Length: 185
Image (cartoon, rainbow, N blue to C red; front, side, top):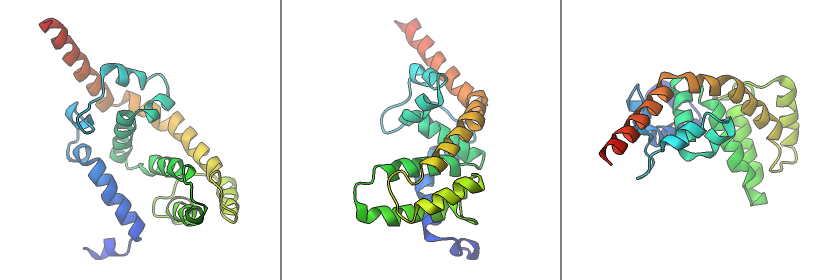
């Protein structure tokens, strides 16, 4: 391992490996294709991809949409926003009170604190409120910060994703596939 990587926190390296494994096919190819949107044996349908245009929530609630949006953010070197959002969603579902505090601290250290390895762009007031929430962690202690990041992605990243050549190419590939199937029928 090179010296620079050895200095990074273990959680950062683990997260990078995890993302690389999940998004390997996207990261190997500069252009997305229908094949690279495949999760297991399933691929997004044209209808699913068209629904992503309806709302940011519909994009995030679809596993293929989340994967495509994450790959888009990775390509723009801004995946920390979606990683933080997903980490907060996972944190919110934590049932064990014993795990809550440690999980909260990990999320704070990775995304919120000054000089965090994947620091998200939130205002000082939100950062201070979130830090105060960690004194008595609950499943809602990141709600304000998560909401700010959600709005940032919805207003900035989501429209760029919809305008991206990769998304337009994906729609074109699916339309072409539908057209060729209907011609055969």
